[in-house]
Image (cartoon, rainbow, N blue to C red; front, side, top):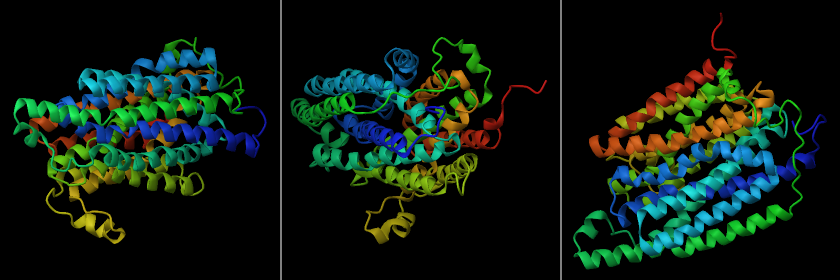
Amino acid sequence: MLSNTTPSGRDVLLPMFFIGLMFFILGFVTWLNGSLIPFLKIVCELSNFQALWVAFAFYIAYTVMALPSAAILARTGYKRGMTIALGVMAMGALLFIPAARTGLYPIFLIALFTLASGMTLMQTAINPYIVCIGPRESAALRISIMGLFNKGAGIVVPLVFTALILSGMEHVSEASLGALDAAAREAMRNDLSQRLVFPYAVMAGALLLFMGLIHVSSLREPVLDAADAPADAAPRQGLLQHPQLVLGAITLFGYVGVEVIAGDTIALYGHQLGVAHYGVLTSYTMGFMVLGYALGVLLIPRWLSQRAALAWSAGSGLLFALGVALGSSGESTWSQALLGWAGVPAVPDTVLCLALLGLSNALVWPAVWPLALEGLGKHTAAGSALLIMAISGGALLPMLYGHLADVSGPQRAYWVLLPWYALILFYALAGSRLRRWSVA
């Protein structure tokens, strides 16, 4: 908790406003990847596996930088940590300019790693902040509200990216580029790559503007209770004695992996199926995630416990994953029935099931965090860093998907989703209740 007294409405709402702003920024930057992956696959002439290095470079930063981020927060505090994080993110956005001008894929990856390093510091600050700002039993509710900001940005950004970057690229593909002579192909690749310069320059300016806003804001530094105070010097083995934390971290590893696969490969998969509007398909996934978060806000904790929400998420995830792996990629019957009334362009049934995973994924992160941090006391901050490190699932599992897609085909590769949803179900039913590793 922030203090020993019950927080006033202003004490809760003002921080939630600024943290909601941060979640929107994080979502905007994160869900660019879903549109960026198929774009760079064309521009840099990549295989599925190579294109998904975008996800690896982005999400591996959460493992590399999580513990350094906890150490930075211990020195600077939460508010200054947020301003530093925004500055690092602005540096990453600026690195996209030389990457776009040269068209060199390694520079794109360095820029993505730098962006994500700043986001790691931000995540390490704002996730425990939002958990501790009020009662623990309603923590999933508050995180769900933050998720509306995060995934709402995920709906907007593919539309913006498509309008600014993919406009006029309907007939551009690996095959069409391959039909050009070497000089014409290089000129086309350079022209396409240059389209990234202006948007990322604007992004860098916006991040610096938000950095100044947070610096001059009245956002208060939290005064944590002794039980929740950061313990960066705590022995690492102390964390491993908490099964709910360790299993929670493994669960988040799998969850982030399947979330990134659902959000970042849907455009790639749609492009390979010949979906005309493939650049906006990430918006489908994010739209269902927003619906899931809205349900979380309405139902948790009054009608649905955090564990029950997690179990429902895992069960539905298993069903939709089976739909992706076994459904028809040539028919759009389900899409027309579910979305046709709203005028949303139809997509193949397997693409719809992949998008529906957004609904299943929405409540996993909000539910796992409070369950994993429960009872950690002085190890809460270090436990938060461990959970942030689990975001590396978003780096490794999409790479596995990319390899399987190149070897056995894009649709068959989605079988990789099923064991992770089974793990989430185990954590909901049993793993989150454990408080020691044996009964002896």
